[in-house]
Length: 379
Image 1 (tube, helix red, strand yellow):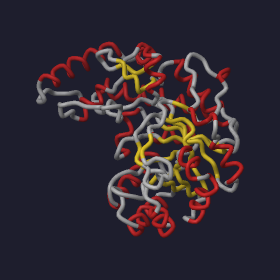
Image 2 (cartoon, rainbow, N blue to C red):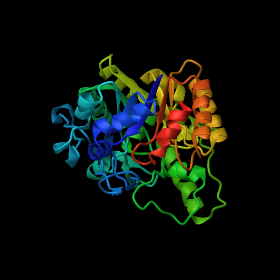
Image 3 (cartoon, rainbow, N blue to C red):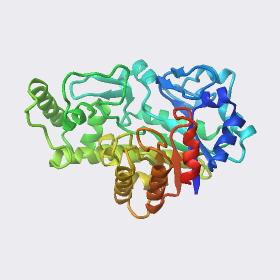
Image 4 (cartoon, helix red, strand yellow):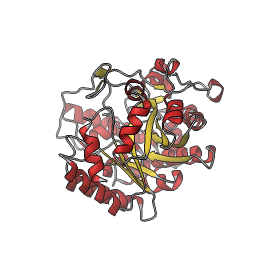
């Protein structure tokens, strides 16, 4: 079984690739999931030697991309790449570690702001610049090219794609804020894309996308005026359920295209959701069983709080993905998810009971180093 740690390239640069690799090995880990395409943030670093707070560059990659692979959407190398190549550093100093390229796909505010016609749109036509739309042909071309480019980098044995599909309205975007208590249905409607490409896909599926968009606007207008307004049941009402199936096919087919494009000796996995619990993954267009078949494996976040809710989430994922799906689970070995090695061990046991072929931990740079001791004890 692979036992992996999610790692940022700036932590390897600041603390030393060999030093971090040795710490991971001492904790019983044999793999890393290195951020190779990532978004902006504001991160507290408990054990960083150079700066305890970091603001990563928005929507950049951590290798030197080949511009010829891409179309309108061109990746941008982060500034640190000029002086530090994390993948090359791992290949030189930690060759025994299995390297997965952790690739944030369509959550890219830099590209969305530069190309608003390729970003998701609310039912009102508002552009969600943080979310590139997977229905758009140029966006699909970009993500396939990004995964191919990433797979060609030194030492990469697998590409793990995060945010390959639609994002929910709330996605932790810069200063995201409202003074209205958004019910789940309202939030989901606000995050449902009705751009031209999505309307085209709906029409090809035999759906009246424009009529659904009009219904969404009416429902949201009523809700924004009065919280008691009735909202559609987006999973049970026939037309809306059909739209969810159309969105899921959009995402699944994109992952299938990525798998077909990559060399067969490079693995593909998908982080199907950033929702908690994973029963909400449908809101992102994620059909767990279909994605597992298309990619070959899922890496699923288990970010509930406490061993029992985490165990329930893990069991629910296995039920949704099916008995034959290859699953890995990502655990947070720290507050507020677990309180020590014993609780983490219970979560590891739940993942193993669900037939996980990989257990991963998030994230080296965010946690106290004592969490490595909890991991070692839990494993």
